[in-house]
Image (cartoon, rainbow, N blue to C red):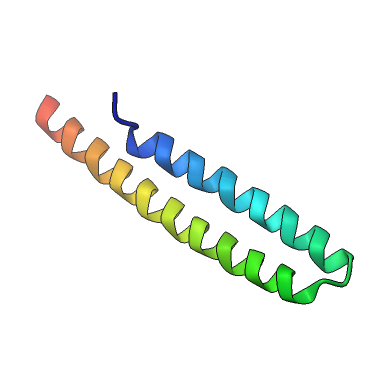
Length: 68
């Protein structure tokens, strides 16, 4: 069974949160290069989460319009 856009968005939000936490840990240890790379990864995950959320919203809007 394929994942819904909502599930994919939630997964990317979780990945972004994890990458942000790992970046903060790396930064705290003075590993600024790793922290920067993890921050970039977190941004990418956040962007993907936004795209999935938008798709889920559009799908829900379309479904609601068909139900009327």
